Length: 420
Ligand SMILES: CC(=O)N[C@H]1[C@@H](OP(=O)(O)OP(=O)(O)OC[C@H]2O[C@@H](n3ccc(=O)[nH]c3=O)[C@H](O)[C@@H]2O)O[C@H](CO)[C@@H](O)[C@@H]1O
Ligand SMILES: C=C(OP(=O)(O)O)C(=O)O
Image 1 (cartoon, rainbow, N blue to C red):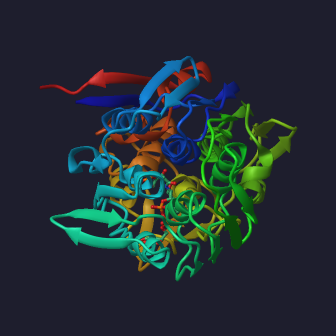
Image 2: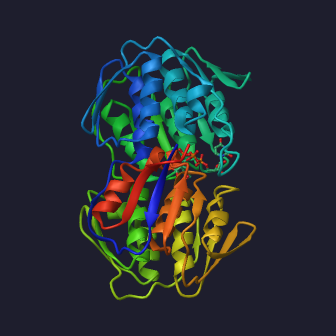
Image 3: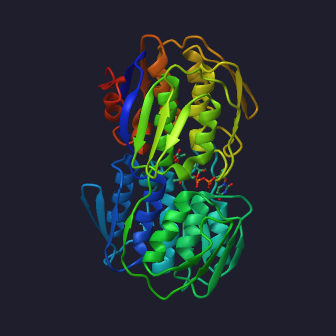
């Protein structure tokens, strides 16, 4: 098992190139299933979740070829519509295979993903939406079994905002017979990116990025080329790392428009943030970090995937910052680990009260999920001495070469093998 060894004290300075967004690349790669011709998807990050997706696509019978950051998927010879538990349990987003397999082949069998460190994460909205479109769905032996000769357009009002739920229904609706309306749809940029790719394939979609999406089903889709949008959460993670180390970092190949709320919070925290078309610079040199209150909500609100990083920021800032998590019921697993590093945090329900902590101290800490791992690395960058972050397979799910990118900015971080 691998670990990160982080030695605190370095100030981050320089440029970092942001990768394509994991949470956009995943649905888009599953959407390639919808066409008989190959699609070419570029700006695909090298990540464990992307490898898992390739394994699933290959298992279905698609031909997947990577050339640099471009991936060609040829789904013309799909022969299996089954996503097994062994793979689904390593990546919840495997549920995104359900909509496209069912829409194109009329049947699909996908393991239930189950809960994870951040919450129970049911998929009832995916199932209810597909049922509304005429699918017969049963859950047997831990598998969702879905059938429909051809899905039918439907009016679906989602009880809660769900990102992958919206994406699954969108991918199902593009080949359905008739018009589908998804109300209370997720408005995340990754949903819009998926809709842009589906439209390039010939889908008829309006309203992506708003709470109501209208889809007019078509008979078939064709292969298309698409460039995945930049990863706003990777961007935000590097910006927080720059802020807490008092550094000056420019994120390149990114999109400031995707993370306006996060940039506003960083300014409120005392950082100088400037932006161009495809870059964001955060300069903290000689400036005082101030605490900020953050409350996670669906886009365009503050993203839950940036909550753990802002928890660390608040611990290091002057004052008391309250971090409120409203999306997931258990997304504070990083808090006990940060407390082991000396962080003054009090948990009260879904609020974390973060008090200024003069000095974090290096410790051996355990990563429990993707963004929790990122927060522990950030804490290690400012802690005294050495921090060892265990179970970094979580971080490898969603951050491309994070140690190399941080090293290039001056951080002292190494990937090491855990003692046997
Ligand atoms: C691969 C991907 O894109 N993952 C993102 C996606 O996860 P994901 O799509 O799984 O998250 P959702 O938006 O679906 O979840 C939001 C909330 O709705 C609940 N819910 C969801 C579906 C459902 O059928 N029933 C239900 O009750 C969830 O338990 C959660 O409390 O959006 C999350 C919220 O922005 C992000 O943290 C994840 O990084
Ligand atoms: C929670 C995340 O991912 P997933 O939905 O794949 O677990 C994330 O990207 O922070």
